[in-house]
Length: 416
Ligand code: BGC
Image (cartoon, rainbow, N blue to C red):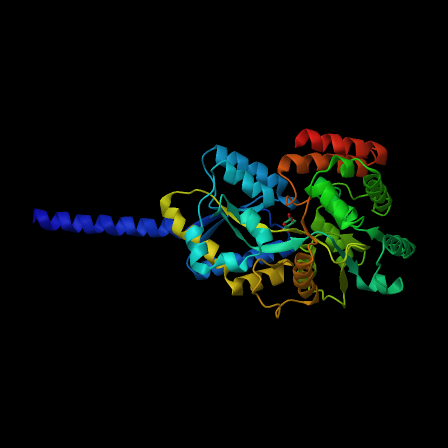
């Protein structure tokens, strides 16, 4: 009798334990900044994919494009000893967390699924630390894009601008039409996103010297003054209410024909797609004039934090789901990005998506693919934030171009 009870009790306990493990293992908590309409639609593809694998999702959204606010919340969570399972993260931030020893290890799943062969080296630079996989790349975005309202462009003669002068002429025509020429939100990361493209438009070598090599001569030279002059010129084409506006509301201005164009990464396309707009019919996507052939990229990756052993299986399943070629296609079609694998067919992508995939491959082959300064793929956060600060103050008229050039070189030097 005693033996029977013990066995029964033990069996019950074991069932509870297994059930308990199953429950804990079957959930992920995900911190991210995908809160706009297009971003949420893309995130839903991931949530549903995991749900179909019986993994439940605890959402931890932190609004704020570019992820600045999300990174602040993350720091607080980790300091409190309560790291989420997976965190949307950009470039150098991933490496910083890895350096702190906060991230888990995806080597086993990466080896089993052959990630090394299909994920481009430009992304692996940020998905691996010390030779170990620490993050699962979801996509590749790029920042040197222009999103134009097609009807407004047609009214202006229909020609896509291919040089700085043609761009300025087009913006003048938008002004004559009585619409806001440039839809923009005055937030440091958005100003910096335009600056990525403006600096690249003055030469890919210049971009590399300034933002990748952090060469003081490039940061503090005449070309940089010209870049700031271009920013001043563009500032003249935004509306009076631009300050603090979220990027997706600026995209909406272009979608609704209230503005002519927006300079923004291809997450903007997610907003056009969500609004059922079609490339070539309702809007035009093109590279920032003067940057054709080059790409400034950023990749959203899910950095996997060290979590309790019972949570690791779901974390690995999430990583595996993200790298599946079918998921890569389904997600990135909605998000506006290109897949993080080189073997995903472009069949389901629209014209802008196909162009994004091709541009990336071409830029990679010709050595014209650079990490985005604005989106954490050129420098660690300390340097990035130092650049943001100068760019924003200059854009808002607090610094002349001459002053900005001096401050930029000094601020970067101090932050290095
Ligand atoms: C991310 C995108 C996101 C955008 C705006 C970028 O840093 O890479 O995924 O859509 O910020 O929030």
